Length: 123
Image (tube, rainbow, N blue to C red; front, side, top):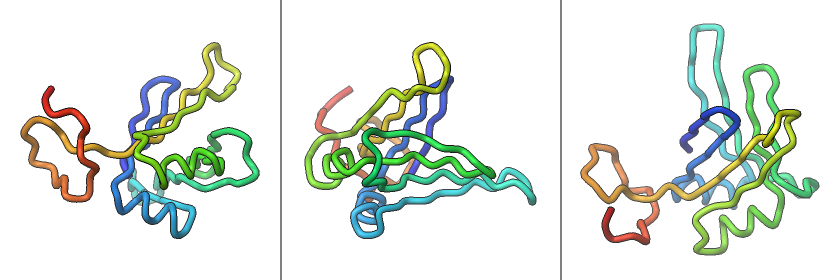
């Protein structure tokens, strides 16, 4: 799982293996060691009680909660992603996007064997 944070926008990109883990366990977790005492962990978590996507942050852990309907879209359809705007007290709110990681159309050194085929054939 990859993360991109820009302003009030959080985007998570999932490989095929991530989607499989989400289906089997309801959770995908990644961590980045910032320093010996500080680890930033980001989690995508199934939340059948949630009416919409939302995000929590505590003790260095950011969790994006995914309601059942959005989970099913990611797991069982060809849809690329799901999204929601969340009230965070700021104008415009917090934009959450969870999407399948697509293969690049141009040359890259990144291993793309676990990524989804890109529906576009050229840039």
